[in-house]
Image (cartoon, rainbow, N blue to C red; front, side):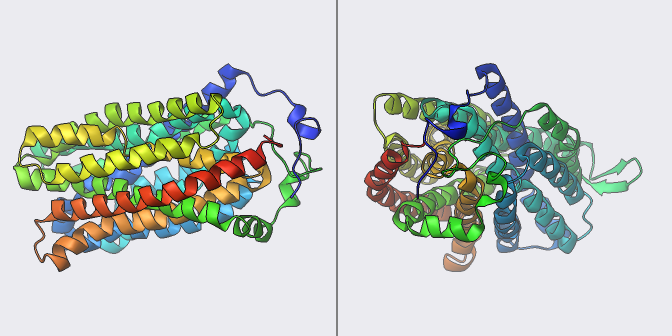
Length: 454
């Protein structure tokens, strides 16, 4: 398939100013922080939700993972289609408002069914963000700066998860000390854990307005002969599927390997705080505060560092830079994450958890960047949505569920959550490492082929 060269058409347009581009990334990161805070806060509320709604570990695992993942991923496909045709900033702004409303509604649920429905709403709204954000960021920056840009945007994962743990832990401690129920104006009495959802979800109802200050960047790397206007209707989903199917080894290995790494991350976030508290007899609030600080500092440093290393290698001619970095990160995560689950010392557990967080989320910056480098502009939103579909069905659908399945049904001991985490981490990281080794030369070849339109 022929693509627009740098000598013709829209590729001659100058990139937006660096200030404007980095401002846009900053706004997108803030919204991603809200996204992950609303997504992950549930991991701190396992015990009171089980108590008040009579749910098992497995049911809560489904609530954290599969229920959210199904709608988050499937709705991402039509929203990715829209991102290739319509204003990406408006898609994001509307999505932020909707998921924030649904996240707040989680705090008003009166039973398990209502909580499941509100959780579905969070997934539907959050599906709007990343396909559009990935496409916009790729249009804002030259390839040698994309690693840093994606690293900063995806720091929303670590900062959002960390804030959910820190703020959620503080709120949990506060509401536990203050009482079991609270009266909200115009709503009435809510349980302590329900107030946590309201406190973390409501700010997004206003923060969505930030997106309206971000301009829509010109689309780059269009199909041959297309303009920004014709791009809106040029590529149907069937053509995107054919394009990706012709490169099945590239996209297939990419999606599966990073899906396995996502399963490790989501499993750790979903059950790590509960396992910490349970095995070392410390309060959930204390554990949440400690892990939250580690995630924000070590996780963000690792995310940004991975992007910088990738950019450094790219500037020196390594077309496989992203895969090289991800292979190293997968190996390091498998070692530190598995060892952490067998530590009998709380101090050593904290140290290994900090080391693991330097690497565990780094793939989140480089994996979507890699998609943008090998996919035409008119297909990026849909290709990104397919990427999110696969990695989140594996990551969100498998990670949070397999841990309690191992403890509840294989080991038949709900207290053995750390064994489930160790199995998840070691098996998924080892498999992902092997697949990434196979993917590396394939990816490098496709980056070289795409250089004509980059």
